[in-house]
Image 1 (cartoon, rainbow, N blue to C red):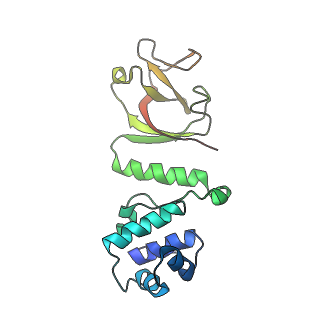
Image 2 (cartoon, rainbow, N blue to C red):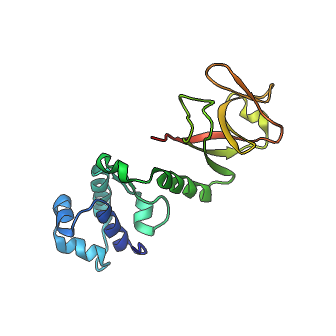
Image 3 (cartoon, rainbow, N blue to C red):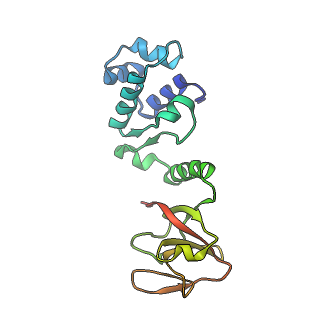
Length: 190
């Protein structure tokens, strides 16, 4: 489905909720004709209606950002409906969200963790993202991700020992070639 216009994006969101125009109009408390006109771009949606529309989506567990609805830019809608959670492709959603950030933030990196070094906070298959640092000293005491030999490890950075530390006070010694960054975002895997 194309989502090039605001009308197409409204229709897209309505379809994610699996609602007909009539059902959606009833939820929104407006006429079906108004929904049809919005979706066909025959009338322009007002700021007040836009805010109400976003809140209606949110109430039905569909997170829609105003920027995306108006322009198609930014983060695509995310369906948080618990009954649909098994239908969601968690990896695809996480990747989409983090990839959108990557295009907007300099030196932003995202990875799927492939170790349990910082368990139970960050586990194997969780997603992490953050900013790559050239100055290792600035990471001292911060939650840090390290890429070493294709493995993504997370821990508190110990500058003096060039290591990550976990909750058991175990140290994972890093190679000098390890790529390091501060963890700023995490997404827990189910």
